[in-house]
Image (cartoon, rainbow, N blue to C red; front, side, top):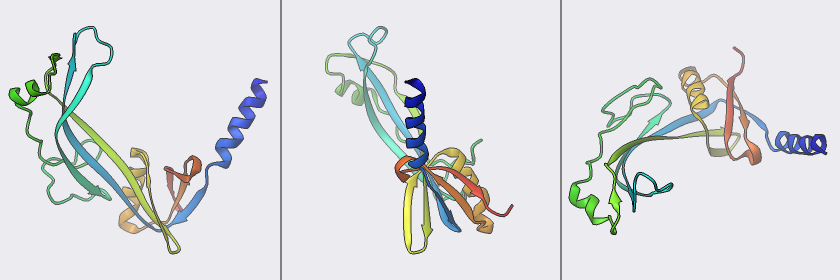
Length: 165
C-alpha cells in the first residue's frame, strides 16, 4: 500500500513539472524592511501572539544590478536594500495594545523572488527562490540561454541551468 501511494505521489509530482528553454529573462528580488510588534495577554507564555506591522520600505533588485535608491549592499547574498522605515513610536505601539502587553518593535527583513521569462510571444512571471535568482544573475550579462524547471502546475520556477556551458 505504501509503495502504491508513493508511486502515485511521485508520478503526480513528475507529471506536474515541465521544462522550458529561454534566452529572454529577468530575475527580480523585492527586498523589504518591516517593523513589527507582538501583542498578547502574556508575552512570555502565549503561544501565538498577535502580530502588528507598522512602517515598511522596499526596493526592487533586477538581475543583480544596483537599483537607484539602494542605500546598502550588495549584502552577502548580492542583494541591495533601501533606507530603513521609521521605527514605530511608543504612542503608535500603545495605540494598538487593545488591553494587551506589547513587545519591542522588531525590524524584519524579507525577500520575494520572481522570474519573468519569454518563450515565443508568451511572457510569464513566476515566483522563484534564491538559487534560481543567483543563476539568472550570473547568466544575465551574456544572455546565456537557460533551461528552466517549473514547479508543480507550472506555478513557480524551481531550477535554472545554463545551456551550452
